[in-house]
Length: 218
Image 1 (cartoon, rainbow, N blue to C red):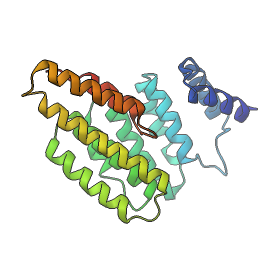
Image 2 (image 1 turned 90 degrees about the vertical axis):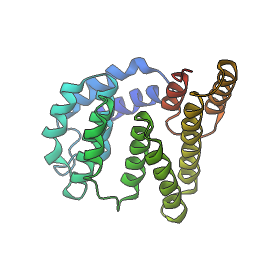
Image 3 (image 1 turned 90 degrees about the horizontal axis):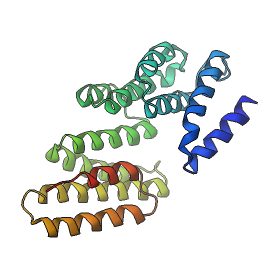
């Protein structure tokens, strides 16, 4: 019954009904208390990440910090290190502590494609936020090379991440041009990029990109 309830509220979130976020969080906490999530004594790494994500979206930083440490030992040993450090990085990133977020990401072995993709995404966002353009463009080039040669990445994911890199690159270049352009010309380019972001198919981190570009000022 808990799984049915979880699937329902998750489906509501997936269609944009953000009012269900509190209900998902309440349900997650109750399922943790009753150990519904534990399978053979282990907590799935994907569930661990989902719980952290919901908690952070609700601003429950103190609760998330306690959860991360308390349930680290419930993760399967094979995934424990990567799952813990990745989600701790997400905790720091959401709180604006980019230095500690990057430090945690460095603790993750990138042999796993899933973590490689997620770590690179977060690093790209951090470098963008910090306006570390040299590091950002270097990482984008390295990421594209990785996507091209890695046969484990599906065509769908490959295309999505290529589109993400394309738009981060466009946004970074537009931000650089904001320092030298006339207001009207810059506004026209900014609105054009926002339209592209809104209509691009299968664009990961669309809301994040839109928010950052909207914040550009001349």
